View 1 (cartoon, rainbow, N blue to C red):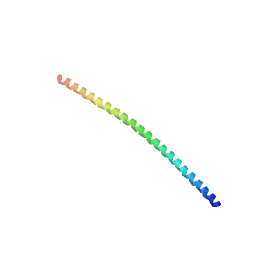
View 2: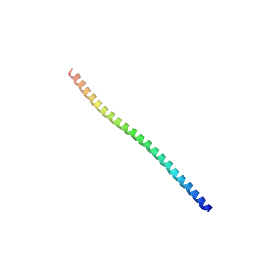
View 3: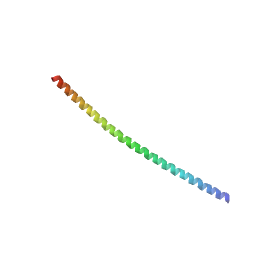
View 4: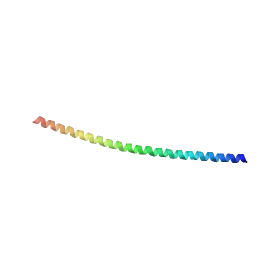
Length: 78
């Protein structure tokens, strides 16, 4: 009888330890996943900003090229 009680207590201890470990591991995994998701969101925002800056730079370069052509024509006409 004592052997059965000891075995049951051991089983309960093992099960509670295993379940506790799984719960803690799951919470840690979820936390890390949330952190990665936040970093990805920041990176995506940075990519969008970078794309917009690239568009603006291209447009400004075109405007500079046009102004330079106009200046060249004015200088050549004088």
